[in-house]
Image (cartoon, rainbow, N blue to C red):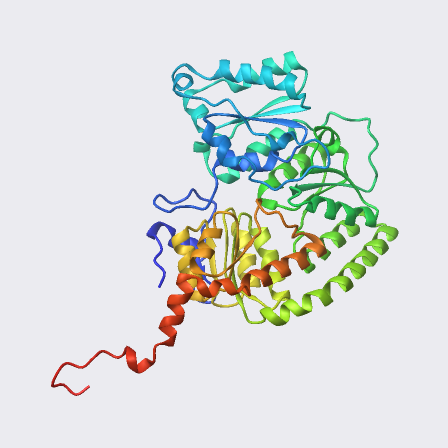
Length: 468
């Protein structure tokens, strides 16, 4: 039986056994080593892929070190986002304030790198010492002639989701600037796609083949100019619902742009995402081209999945990711390769997300919100999972238990979106789960040794003179 902190007991349930609704969207429990990132990290990962902007972290150097290169976001042009800049606040600034250092940093960096915009990320210490970041940004913007945007992501303000909100507000302030550039009547924005390992390019190619123009991608391979005309697209397609639904709602309220929620992972969800966009525009040519695209891609993919399904049939998986929408796709994708999900959870799921997760999993599945390593590893062992899908913080958990691991978070270097990504996913799962290295893991060796001991040998030795 896995021990769960009393304050977290309503954030864990077993489908088919527990009847209560999962509690979520609350701060992490004290004493629980949450896998969640902080507010600042949430904002940084959303805005970071805007490749022609300057990203300056206003705070101690550790904040910059923590988030540098934490996304595998690729760019087809400028790579300013690959550099990490910090005001490196120390004891002197904590006492006397860091505004002067922030101004000096921006005044040096902007002429040197010539970005099209600058984002200034406020970290925990800024919330404590009270720097007027708004005033400094406004002064530099007037002097340098580019947008200089404060991102209010002080860590004490809440959870990673609050960081998403701060990032959305900063991105929204760049919109509505371009009324002249041509925009197709069949145009969309992709929200919440970050071009990890080039996935944005795969998805854009699908839409191009359908006859759809992608006006802006927020924020994978993003450009400041694209955000300026994003308000003129006809539809917003929200891929990472946790990070970008807030922005989609802002754009709907201000510019009247409707939005749909989709996922680009797995065969079913990828196909549904394409068809929903085609149906929105109600154009026979687009619908026909979408049907041809899906037919071609699926017919190419399914034969390649067959051999992996045969080898993985009956294996079990645990899924713990940032956004619940991604978990839905993982459950479905795993079934396509013969695996069942026995543990599933997320860092930022909503009540509706968890109800849907319960609906698509089998009885006995453990559903988790904002779990910690002790809980997660305990349920993985209890359910006998052969694979853990997560991010960089979950990788050591899998390796210590001697089970396969698939990185499906923002650090990965393998494209897992789209039809091509589904085949990559199957290959990665197969290579990890079937690797012979796990038999050398201490946890696996201990389990094998215990299983090898005959039942008779496990009986207690009888005391002298006592019949056993």
